[in-house]
Length: 133
Image 1 (cartoon, one colour):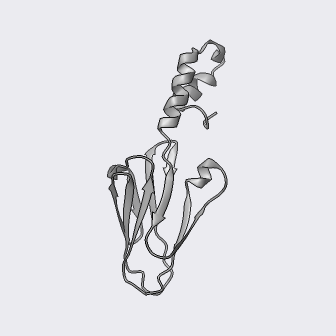
Image 2: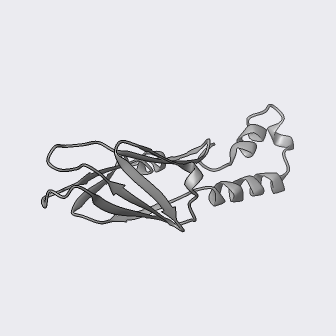
Image 3: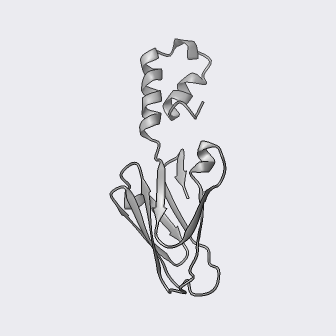
C-alpha cells in the first residue's frame, strides 16, 4: 500500500472502516505520494561506476558509486542531479566529504582520496518514507 498512497492514505485504508473512506481522500493520497517522490537522475565528475542497490523502487534510491582516482588527486568533485529542488537541512554526510545543495543538485567534494580505498556516504532524508543514500 505504501507504494501507491501517502502515510495518511495508508492509515485510512488499513482501518476496519476503510470502505467508508471518500474517493477524493484516496485520490488526494495518490497525488500527494507522487509529489513526495524524489528521483535520482545521474552523477557527473571523474571516472566512475554507478549502480543501483537493487531492482525495486526503494532499492533503486540507494546508489553504489565507485570513483576511480587514476590521477591520484587529493580532492575529487562530484555532482548528483535529481528531479526536484533539494534543501541543505536534509543532507547528511559520513566520511571526509563536503556536500552542498544547489537547486536540483548535490555538489560533493571528496577529500584525502590519494591512494587507499575510502568509503563515503551522503544521505538525503526529507520525510520518513524517503531516504536516498
